Length: 91
Image (cartoon, rainbow, N blue to C red; front, side):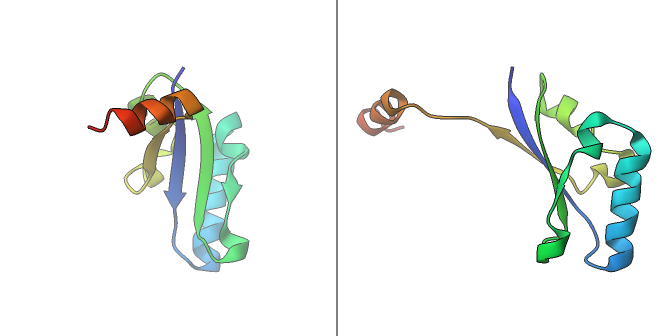
């Protein structure tokens, strides 16, 4: 199943942090209640890594009021064999 990184930014204020955390916790979603946050290091974003069928499915996990600013990134891993193939067959 495809893996995605969901990144949800919020306002870089104490009130912005509180609001975003409350929205996540209020959903009751296991994924959202286990998000990782960067606020204490000055990076006002939440991150979730999730296995779902599509980018749209990943986006739909984000609460509607935060969805428009969310960034969804498809993740992958590479093997040594894939690296060698990439080096010998440039696109």
